[in-house]
Image (tube, rainbow, N blue to C red; front, side):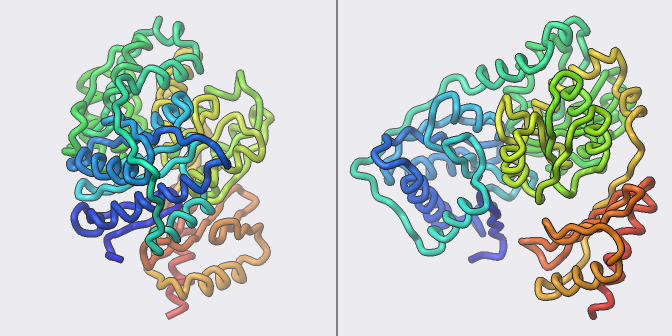
Amino acid sequence: MSSTLIISVSGLRGITGSGLTPQVIDDYVAAYAAWLDASLDDGAERAAVLVSRDGRAGGAEIARQVADGLNRAGFDVLLGGVVATPTVGVLIRHLQLSGAIQITASHNPAEYNGMKLYTSRGRILNQQQGEQVLRGYESKNCVVGVKTGSTGEIDDTSSEHIRLLMSSVDADSIGSKVIKVLLDCNHGAGSPLGRRLLSDLGCDVTVLGGEPNGAFAHGAEPTRENLLHVGRNVIEGGFDIGFCQDPDADRLAVLDEQGNYIGEELTMALCLKSVLPSLSGPVVVNCATSGINRLIAAQFGVACYESAVGEANVVEQMDAVNAVFGGEGNGGPIDPSIGYIRDSFVGMVRILDLMTREAASVSQIVSELPVLAIEKTKIPVEPSRVAPLLDLLSAQFSNEEQSRQDGLKIMWPSGEWLLVRGSNTEPIVRAIAEGPSSERALELCGIAAQCAAQLD
């Protein structure tokens, strides 16, 4: 297996033509088709499988190869063209499909592409399902259809998603404000739906990187460093807000009216400020997400549960506690009334709803949030040394509250916390910490680095 191939719970990614070769694609599609066939109830009729893609170069060719593989397995295919990842989940449920394969490498650089797999419930595969597909891929398990499937196309991929999004907020009130929005799609999959959604909401919208061709104007991740020029555009254009998506549009970062990077961590917090006044119930975040969300939940008297890191883990916890909202601190809110997929468009409508209801600018709303700083670092650690590192840290802070849900999380009574967890794809651990200042958060991350140095 090529070192450039990254396999996660819900799919795989690799450099096109290197790790992600035609043979890898064929074998992985065959394994997914076999899993999909086995997951159908006895006697259940096969429905079509959606094949869609983000805007990356070469995605159309991969989509055709994926469709051919599913056809050979006997599945009919509906081609969706360029579709945002959260829309895939909406389409599966709306059209009652058997599943879907989204051609995307998420936030990886432009030379990557990949496949994200979905169930008939419109969700990405969970840990158990993903492992079943992986075993099938490694054993080259496949299913041959009694007859070759057919391939068709979907004419309208956006309307149902937009309907659900607009029905989740007071669209008329938002429209009455004519909010001036800069939408940075960075030539990813978000522009077709994003432009239409914001226009339908009555916003005055300008789109950057609106052609979904994968020719990224800046780094694929919507980080502070990558969005400096977008912030300048917000100031120069007199925009009320800047929305910045990753290439497959399941993550959202926010810029305020002064061009300041509000970031991805606060996307969830702003959404909760919109949701919880009118919809009371538990919320779920992963254990690496800012504690601001727990403080906001407490303000509204609702429980905030933590899951292990990963969208599928958040979704399973949301199911378990019947959550009204959830998401991850990477800018990925999840509204179960729309779909159990991280959705940048959910973030957009919720933040616009909040601005409208509070009659306030983004900077004013953010200024009223609790002040916490989160920092994320990487520490070189070989996989065999991860467990000893966690044990060493655990012993050093044996008097503090700890969780082994995902790596090791140490929590202090002040609200500070440190999470250290091993990477599944690199010989590193990720140290994530939150405190009252960036300096304190980095100091906590440094504790993990010092312990790692003691192992040498």
